[in-house]
Each structure stands twice: as C-alpha cells, then as structure tokens.
Image 1 (tube, rainbow, N blue to C red):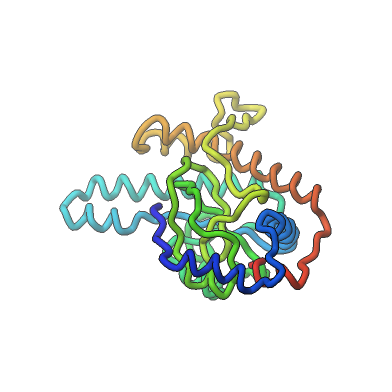
Image 2: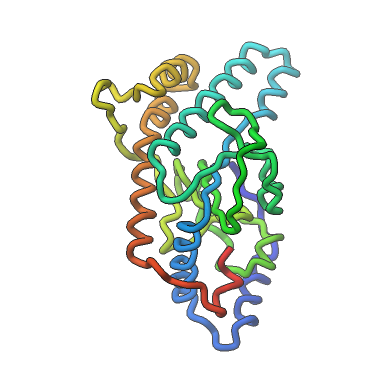
Amino acid sequence: MPLCFFAQNEVAKESLNKNDSSQINLKDLRNKVAYAQINSLKRGALFVRLKTNNLAITKLKDAGNYDLATNLKRETDLENKIIISAYKKEFIFCPVYFFYSHSSDSVKKNNLSGIFIDSTLQVNPSIVCNSTFYLIADQGELYNSSIEIIPESLAKKARESGDFSRQASIIIKNKYFIQLHKPFPFFQIKTGRPLYSNDNKDGLHEDIADILYAYRKVSRNAEDFKQMKNYRGKVAAFNLKLEQFYTEHQGYEITPEIKEYVY
C-alpha cells in the first residue's frame, strides 16, 4: 500500500526542537516513547486492518471481467480468514480486533462503533473496544519513514513517505497509520516457519485446512500461498517479540516530557 507524502515533515522536526528547550536527545526520546508504547499496548488493544480490494473488484466488473472479479473477491476473503485465525490462535499479548481498510478514517478519529468484524468477515456491532490506547497491525510495504517522533497534534495531519525497505507480513503503526520507530519491535518480515499441528504434518492447520486448500486454488501464485500458510508462525514470532520487549521494560510509565508523543 503506497504511502502519501508529508510535505510538512521539516516543520514537524522543527516543532519537535521548538517544543523542547532542553533539546531532548532523539535516540533517548525514541527509547522512552517505545517503552511507554509497549506498556500502553499491554493495557490496550491491537487493531488488525484487513483489505477488501473493493476498488479493484469494481474495476474488473466495470470492464466485464466478472470471473476475475469473483476470483479476487474469494481470494481476498480467504486471505482475511487466514489472518484472523492466525491472530486468534497465536496473539495473546493484548486483545485484538479486526476492521476493514475502508474504516480507517473512523479509526483515526476514534469512532469505533460498528466497525469491527467477526470471523465470518461480517461487521458485528456487538464487538466493542473500550481501550483508549490502540495500535494498528498492517501488512505490505515497509518504509524508511520520513516522519520522526512527532507530537499527536502534528500526527493528525501528517502524511508519511520514504524509501521502500522491504515487504513485511506485520507492520505496527499508531492510530494515525504512521509507522512506529525502533526500539519498538514494529514489524515482522515475510520469513518464518509454519506451525504444524500434531495430526497434520503438511503444515495445514486443522481448523483452517479447508480455507488454505481453497486459497491455494485461487491464489495468484505459489508465493502467495506460502505466505498465507506460514502466517500463523509469523504472528506467533511477533507475539514473542512483543512479550520480550515488554518484559524488559515492564512498568515504564508515561512522563510529562513524553506524554504528547505516546498515542
């Protein structure tokens, strides 16, 4: 997913310096914000953004390519079901919720009513999140972000750009969809091993074996299927990273000097 350009990036950096007369060391600020974020996430929630490919599906239909449109819709749904199953089985660090990409603006504005979906991919109004702090789990292109640590007042209007780094199965962003910074473990690259069930040694988990079989039949190429088959292992590996980082910095509290940077 391409990222928009943030023309005011230099203004944001300048504002960071102006807001802090003591000239906080940037590395020190990054560390403190990351420690506060991991503790806040432990008490908060993770929102997983799922694709719909609605625009591509509509264009295919408009061009008369109904078979391709149907195939893309089925592939997208199967992929989303695999992702949901992976998080439900392997992610235990904090509560996790799922929403479609077209609800991204609502998430930015903290309008969380009626946006979360269940395992059947339907919006379920009974799913409610009362957490005041949440981060976003996305997937796609990882960037060397153009945006440094900035206060929330600037983040609301920020637009991110940067040089492409690599593909990632999981990318953690703040509520304004800006990538987090090291030392927070904010990504999981597309590597890893599948988690095998005791009764199914070919890597297809019993609970989603039929879904994976269907996905293999409609996926665009073998690499897509490989990534989906291994997705549970990636979520498990990422969950472990979060747990380890939290253990190292458990109990870190938000201090007045970093409060405006933790969101």
